[in-house]
Length: 309
Image 1 (spheres, helix red, strand yellow):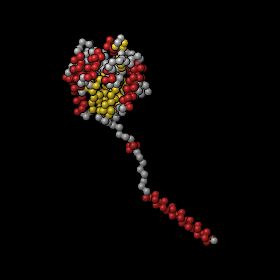
Image 2: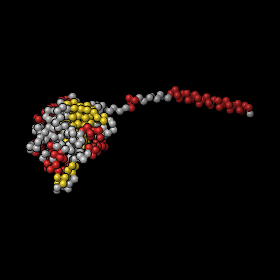
Image 3: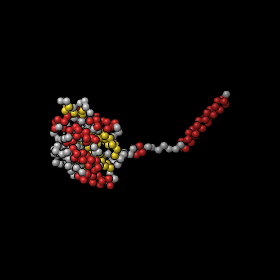
Image 4: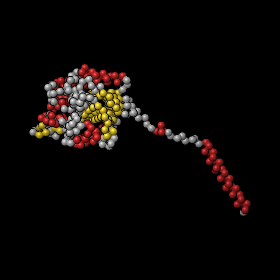
């Protein structure tokens, strides 16, 4: 019996030795696991360099494509450097004091389209020819007319449905969302055009700056929901009115930049303010008139800066 016990112990020891040998052999032959570096897990977020040229308060002076030579030539110059380009206008591109003709205004829109403009804001002087004038401008072969705060409450044809409240467009591999804001002062300066059957049928969400900011925020959110990588708010809001561009930038969130043209401003400017979530948002203000323009530059890494001519 003692021999049997001894034999069992020896067998058990031999089994343990065999198991240990197999484990050691397995560790020697297994391929080492390489650590994953941060460089391999971080996605490349770079894209093409983009410049958005913007003008404002042309006041009907651009009657032909030649009148927009400064901005169109700058666009071609940038393209030769492999920079993607778009051109937009902050509003007041037609008329000047109401004395110009609607035919001239339609010619301005055609010239802007030929010069490369993609979007324009319906602002004060665009309403110099009444609602019927707006209707003809929308039907013209011009840039896309925009206003997020142009509203109708009447019972006839609603032309505001033909005005883009926002638009998401692809520039290279980047989706740019544009949100346009009409100067709320137009409801006072052109009030006679907005009355139907004795009551006001058109408004511009201008009862308060917060109400206007909510309207703009809805369009910013819509741009984001449609996949916009960058959202730019475009406006012709004047300084000193119920709401100005700085107020709106401070009361909204998720816009990446604000651009505008103040009527009467003598010098262009750019600044940075804190938005509704205390995040920095850049603002660029372009001097109005022919031959002047602003440049909103988007670097390959997504950084936004401004330059002016």
